[in-house]
View 1 (cartoon, rainbow, N blue to C red):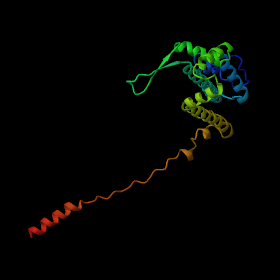
View 2 (cartoon, rainbow, N blue to C red):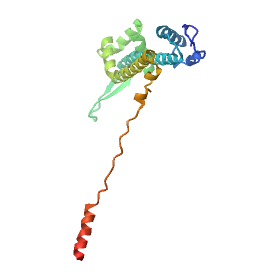
View 3 (cartoon, rainbow, N blue to C red):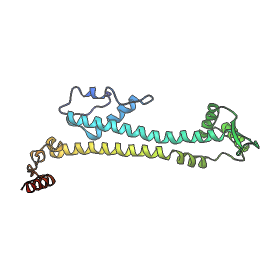
View 4 (cartoon, rainbow, N blue to C red):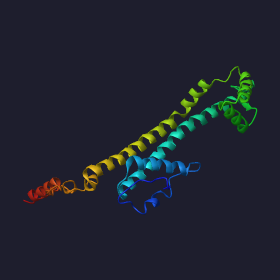
Length: 231
């Protein structure tokens, strides 16, 4: 944890910094921003002992995961918009052959990388890129429409967006459970929070069930018949 996290604690765990030495970051994420979030959480929660610092670490990691997932939401939509516009920038050539039942459409023009770069620059607001995009779309009788593009991108990404939203909801539920643990620990003590009181620890055993031996009625009938015939 960075030195910016300074909260007056009694007692203060000496090895508390070791908990935050390796934050759950991926490439491109800022260690400083993570430390700043931990600092704000420490001020808000004011952990009183080592156990509450463990809870704070859980909250920080889960909240960081939520922030990452929300970035994925916006990033996925932006990427899907770029893909949709990239596909529109293909110059289609329709080949009609009498021997074929259906005409063949060939995708011609610049490569995917060049079209994708043009689409990204257009969506980022470049006037020159937008002019080039409209020039290509004009050959198809179309023009650049950001709203229509966004709607199509959303529909094509809706399944992935729903999955990410579900992951966010689950992460938020996990975070809220940790917060409730802190509240429960402070109100009723550690034993109650961990649910290990004698009354809750007791296990009710069912009485043993006695089974009666059931004689095979068919076998018994055959033996009775043999005994009667013997007489």
